[in-house]
Amino acid sequence: MELIKTIEKERNSFPLLKAIYSNDLLPKFCIKEKGKITEYLVKNEAYVYLDKSDELTYEYIYEFAKSLTLQCPRNYQIDLSSFVTKNLSINEVIDAFVKGINFEAYKIYNLKTFTKTENPNTLSIFLENQTEENIAVFKKALTIIDAQNFARNLGITPPNELNSEKLAEIIKKDFRKYKNLKVKVLDKIQIEKLGMDLLLSVNKGSVYEPRVVIIEYKGDPKSSEKTVYVGKGITFDSGGYSLKPPKFMLGMKYDMSGSAIVASAMKAIAQLKPKKNISAIMCITDNRINGDASLPDSVYTSMSGKTVEVNNTDAEGRLVLADGLYYGATILKASRLVDVATLTGAIVRTLGETYTGIWATTDKAWEDIKKASKIQHELIWRMPFDEEYEEFMRGSLVADLKNTDYTGNAGSCSAAMFLREFTNNVEYIHCDVAGTNDINEKPMFAMVKTLIEMAL
Image (cartoon, rainbow, N blue to C red):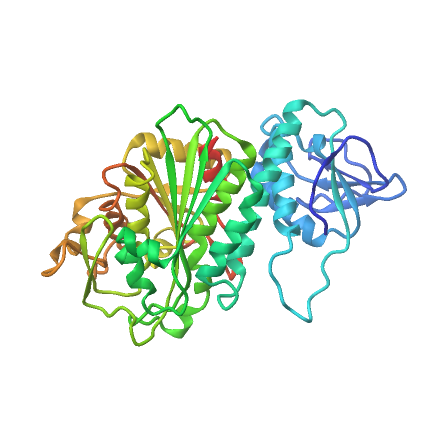
């Protein structure tokens, strides 16, 4: 299946796939089962039955587009205007089909030698009377899904092929084509000079150097307002000496997803060119064990000067983010910080694979990300900051903070409280995508779309 790259203005030779509803005059033999397609090849047409038109949603069309991409029995040209209802605009229909088809049609990393034959058929989208607004919506959707797919491909790549040094090099090389982005890659010596000892502590067991990648976009040079995205980039998480059980080590290649998400957002921002200042920081290493790996009970000094007792080496994501957040607040002078991380198993137990957990230090920050998520049809849920969640972590006898709350209560909230300590009192949003980033081994990469929308 090929990716959608254009909206066609004229009919092609493919059967025209139209939506049809229960209140329409149904052609003879039309299957009255929602989502089922009836073909009338003599007329070079096909109808998909969608029941009541006023109950049709964006989400249904998006999922239908994904399913059609995988299962369509022949080539179709999709009549976009037929999917418009009183509750669903043509722009929403365009957006849903472009993102749904290109999500499934995109060829992500795969080294299988024996694979199920991919769908050889082709889908195209058709809108006869196109406005400039329709074309702009199409181009925006295309840019956003391309960015999401870029992140998905990085995420599914095995850790033996995507280490910290390689990930930084991929971003540096790919982003050269965006002249409005400034990309800087910090190596181990530069990281040491900055005093990012929390990040370095996680890297101690690795055979690869850590990397910090800074991506800057200045869409409004006259403004002092700047949003800085910070992404967790653990290219593989063994847990360190707090070793994960074998079952829970599977899928830990996805622990770099936060960094891929923020980088991919910047990729789209460079093309959509909002009049805002946005930067991103990727905090990249793996978390392994060797003779010099960080030991539980060790104490390290963060870039902020606060000391941390590492009572769990498997709570490493918050360590690398802590130094990244402080860098964003002080060196990049952020007026708003937003981090993204596959941070806690606790958020999966709390919200499952449906909602991304969000913490926001101000109502304004929450309303902004809530609005962006609604536009991009991503589900988020606000979670609480509270001093009580940090009480255990403040109980260290030898450092300012412990990195983990071992009470077993509200683990995602205590992680958020730990991170807030390193924001230098800058307005802050924390996004825990541990449940929504990858599902059943498949890369989904929630929040790419929302972060892009926040920047527009």
